[in-house]
Image 1 (cartoon, rainbow, N blue to C red):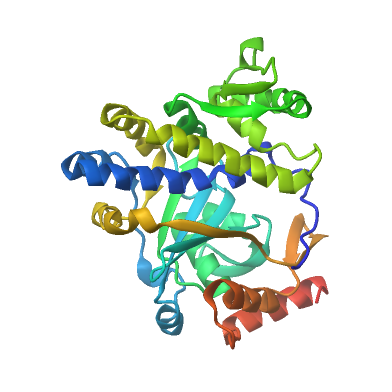
Image 2 (cartoon, rainbow, N blue to C red; image 1 turned 90 degrees about the vertical axis):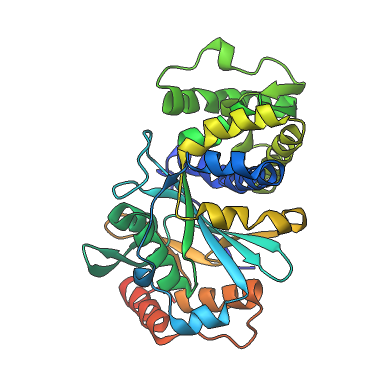
Length: 358
């Protein structure tokens, strides 16, 4: 596996947290579909609470060849934006970018995390430029971000789900918190991060009431669970952090399974207004027959190999774009003989010329 350079220390706290918890969006969608199996009329009404934003699907960089070659995969982009209000469009950076890739024959799902600082081609005011992929959303909203992903990674993404910081914390709080076994090495880090999270999401200073005061199994609030999930400095480092992420997600799913229809009803009332998507009610309801067989089989970071560079600002440079895209298509989509198209080859060459990284 390739190497990823150390993250720029200036990256905001919420970026790391959103990167971990965008998986909660998948959980939310699954919950919606479960509800659909219980009461389709109720769900149709609830889905009306989602912020639906249509995009021009002819302007998101999907080639006819790619559309045909990846026809067996449904790829959905998941964005976490740095907005506080109910604003999900142009002007907001996508601090977290993930792709949920569903094999439509097996219903296996692979999660691809695209590093926000990755240096690639994005569009600003109708002109292509090399920049961080996070800026594609700021320049062009979800449509601009999808175009960047499709153009640089040769994908067929036409659907997206966007959430802001409030949504991921609300998801945990809406189920009454999650039960987590906290050990002594984790307490101080949870409390260290909580104050920033409280300020970001509640606009106030953290208080003693927000802190963890004991070890062992206990119910964590949304902010506490997020703080727990971003710990990386105890034994195990990033591997242990990934494990904590899975622990919180599994705890949330377990809690959701215990909710009755009335409680689920309240849950979606809280969460859905905090989500923006272009996935239609009909498409969401269409997932009902296959919900039981959904299985997240793998999670990976992309680019596989990247190196930091400071130009006008810090960037993560794929080494190279061409080789990273080819590896992605071989490993995720099973395209053993895949080679990049001329557009990606040209962008890759531009990056090499600009950075001298090859």
